[in-house]
Image (cartoon, rainbow, N blue to C red; front, side, top):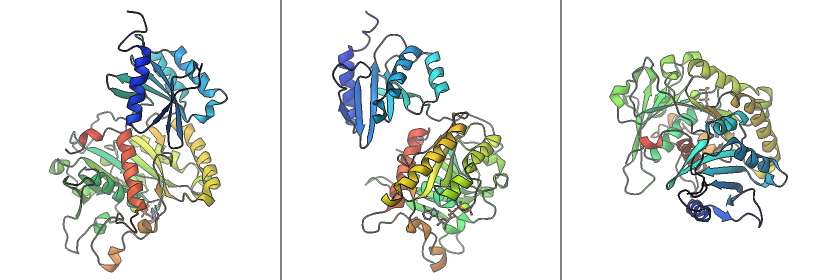
Length: 390
Ligand SMILES: Nc1ncnc2c1ncn2[C@@H]1O[C@H](COP(=O)(O)OP(=O)(O)OP(=O)(O)O)[C@@H](O)[C@H]1O
Ligand SMILES: [Mg+2]
């Protein structure tokens, strides 16, 4: 067998990969005739990717990556958002180290095994097993919602992310870590309600719904809630006020911020400060910075673009040093400004039943769409999917 003939011949491999991308909603385009830099171009909406396919016996090496990176940096390649390097035999250790050292935001490495593709770089954020004061149930993942700044939407996001995960079929516990707040009150069905919870019907017809159980941190006893898959912690903006035994358990942390000049330019380091702060107490959590209260209107497009550029270049200095941290670009997931969210909690005033801000208004509901997209993004970048029911 020659070096190149492995599972399929090269042409058949291109067809197999192209078909699988088509099934995932990509338009597949052949590169210009005579092009030797890449094998396929993929288009989805405004996103374009250049794809190189290797079906060699040997693992892909640094030189092959370098050649592809040169192509991505060459004039004309700006039209590609990223380059995907797909190999059936994986990548050599030096090649992976090379990708990790360069931290190029435009390079993605995939390993194609049988019918499945696994992302090799950037790595899917994973957490290392670890001991903490609170006993831990193996099939539970903890999310902390934390920014060391008040009023950026932590409570709003904790509650509605819990709602989105419940819609997707997870049973969720929402924990209030903030000693000064009363998240429980927002979910109580009356003054004497000892066990506030919310039933969320399933997104898919015929499937059972899920529950959100709301507890104060001192009521949390993991062994009493073995069937719950996701624990979402609404934190105090003062990290030290949150019980360290729970902060140490976070598998992932969502760090909300607003995309406003005062939120970013004046306090540009709020997120990096938050990231550093969490790292002092927790070495293993995946950290995600998320924009909340976003206004995508056309009139603000130029300003938003500048603010985003400023924020991402500021964050990249930290992110380069911490491979478990990332910035969620608004194109991937963002929580838009919405009056439905702004007025969420009105039931505390008018005495109506607690709900999430997910009900439809004239057939549309931005918060529900945004939070489902966020939950979907998090499912794709964490290790929670295997916990989902059914
Ligand atoms: N996407 C959004 N659109 C509109 N209003 C929002 C949005 N997110 C949050 N808000 C509003 O902003 C205010 C602050 O939100 P929230 O209480 O969730 O912040 P927080 O970070 O938990 O605050 P604290 O630090 O005091 O605990 C609330 O009035 C909430 O309704
Ligand atoms: Mg709060």
